[in-house]
Length: 180
Ligand SMILES: Cc1cc2nc3c(=O)[nH]c(=O)nc-3n(C[C@H](O)[C@H](O)[C@H](O)COP(=O)(O)O)c2cc1C
Image (cartoon, rainbow, N blue to C red):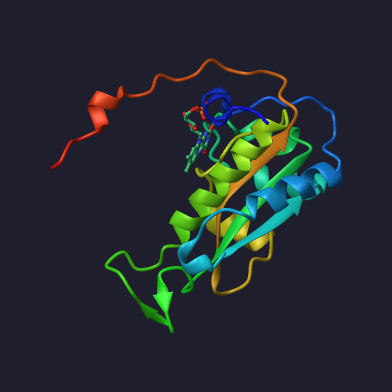
């Protein structure tokens, strides 16, 4: 088993992919692992669309803002994941919001995304989380129903280029002791 800290630190956003396919068995095993992510009261509000269709990927690329450095990855990666969340589930108890933060679906989808990206890294697959695009256009292309939101697109495949790590804040810059 790999060292978790190593997997966390070595994961990079991958924006260039090899042409090599990701077999269904590999992908399914990865998605099964991601399904073990924690969520509000185990609500598991995530829904995932696996896009392999070339024409659909081309249409989705058109929803990406042109300056987005991940634009090409949308069509280049063999698999494109579209992560959606069910609304009014996470953070709710009997249809009533339980905290001042309202719907926690973004939080739970963030956890799912991170688990997925780390599990991918662990088996040699690269990912990039893509959040900057026209969500409503992409939602309509993918026929996401009422009551659900499409939040991120995640190209996944074998890395062709691994960029160097952007600098992180030192712990002294974000850790507070006892009070803020
Ligand atoms: C919520 C979220 C949205 C992101 N959206 C984009 C995006 O639209 N395009 C892109 O190239 N990278 C995107 N990223 C990747 C970040 O730019 C990247 O994680 C950050 O620069 C740190 O680099 P690293 O992932 O290689 O460690 C996104 C990351 C997160 C967490």
